[in-house]
Length: 170
Image 1 (cartoon, helix red, strand yellow):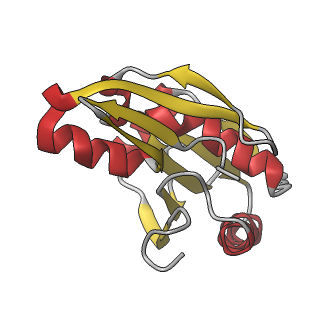
Image 2 (cartoon, one colour):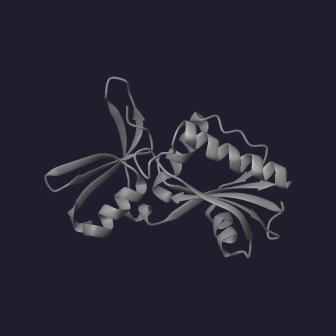
């Protein structure tokens, strides 16, 4: 059954189904004019039916994210490890960059940052709920917080890329 957060792309005379966000971006980079419509899989039913939502092409090049603001190094490391373990049990719907960093630029001294294609935001949220990811950290999901983290001089301690199924051996 296709995973919510994947995409269906209609071209002139062809359709590709269940693509991850970075795969759609690659198609758009190759020939944006050939892409007629892009849909995100919102819900998949056991009988094969899909609920699809239209997606604007620009959202594939925009980056969105979630920040977990942690009071202790142990809390941040536990969140980082829990995300990696969750991806091992059930891969995310799109490529997710995860970084564990120390930063003096937030209310909490440690941050676990998730970055992903803006088109995949709802899919990542659904994935986090589906894998029962539970953090005691304060969550910030606004674009301004993500930009602030990206522009801050933070010490990145650990970094990994979580891949969707079928990509990079995941």
